[in-house]
Length: 499
Image (cartoon, rainbow, N blue to C red):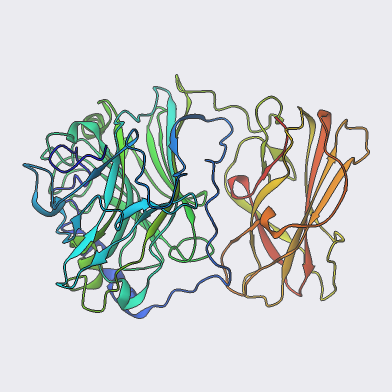
């Protein structure tokens, strides 16, 4: 059953949380009004369905928003907040946002394709409605000596320019003690995994803590950083936003990522022991998803009140999945990145050293040689090759999957291609070889996703159980006159059909 604002716990705990973010982000105001986003030539990717595997991590909770179109998200996992604020809490959720949150399926619901949809709307009187929800669980916490990982795959509302003024999508977490109090922010902590305003091609990651105003987290602005989304613009496609709370070292650290690329971090020593303890020595955190309209953050970036008459309603934030993992400590074994994918691990990451590992490493890249103007469609030419030996596991009846980060910069007419080969016993024979159609990269700098959805160009042999086998992945330029860049570490992943 959906929870209304008469009983709902806190969602946007920031009593004035971002009221003064204007000063911090005003530098982006002109960008919001005059810059056009450069979009990929490819449309948005569909939802992936199941939450992706994360070798070395223990999945604690997830939702992939699978269900009938128009259905509300699971009432066992989520509660929907309504109105303009919590009972007894700050007005307008403490941020100055103007919309009325509802539990109407016009504003919130599943899209039937594996995504959650949150849609701001404006009625004939000019009043805005939207939606936000939070997990019922409020115990997400890094285990002692281990790491917490909160991740979601999200497409921001597909609107830019003046039509986007006032849009404020967010994916974030609040400390459990805020529930039922509403006035102890920011001491109990807030982790903004992803924020965006006014349709800019930027993701913000922010920590709120300590006292307001001022304090160790510079409230009400918080300790934040931002960057453009890799590859397609934030509004043009899905991107994966991840937050980690790492307690494995003597100096605890928080990290923010987009598509596996770290762009912000804050350490315990930066904040100080007292404020750090206030935001960590409690039951844990709950997760929130919402699209606000107007408020201190978008107003400050735009340099004037938002939304405006030009703001266009009806653009949805789509959420493919939200998941929480832990690793290490008493929350799971982080594993060894060099371990082969035996047992239950069938996810491999491309290593800059030419290996395939069962855990993602530091993001990096390698150069894929130019095709030199020749056509090498289907025939590897100077490929980047990645190999792993000693692979064990029964065939699970599926097929190969992959998601490779590729970028040919501003080169026109380039295309990268992949071949995956299986030697089931490691004797030097390749019982199964698959060559996929090449991926035509756009002439815009920034990584793009090359996946198995391109389809097979050719294949030979059959799958079977792996017993000390070898897997080889080759990536080359099939066409074009320019080199390309291939992401490594946790940027490029291959999924094997072996359990």
